Image (cartoon, rainbow, N blue to C red; front, side, top):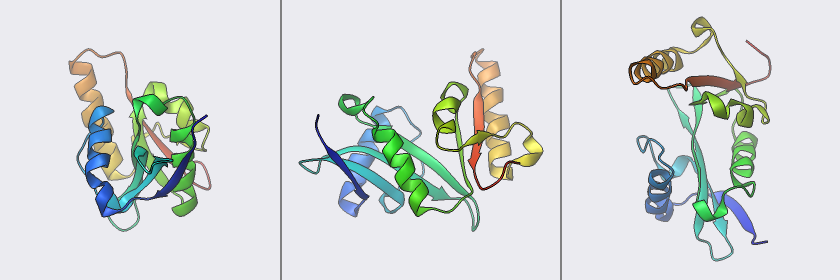
Length: 152
């Protein structure tokens, strides 16, 4: 089994992070190397990443978790998420497709169903994205989740 390690991203990682995000089909907006934790292989090649980005002073979002195709299904995303949780205080919010909610649940994230319990940023994102999904007749929905000390 090949090994990997986690480290904070450096400015030199910016291009590799962007490429990995694009390959994973994730929204490439809001990508800045300084917020990322990266996974690298033995040759220090970037093979995974994730970030916690701030929306104002007290709202943080887990975002841009991506793993290179060859490295998927080996626990990299899990290690990246746990690493970010170690370095960032709760609460941390996230949005994901509803089918991914159980994956994030194993890290203590839980769904917030009532829009009134969501910060404005996530309430708006949820409404907009779910409307888009309805208009495109998609069967999937967006889940808004939070990791914090107590349930809402």
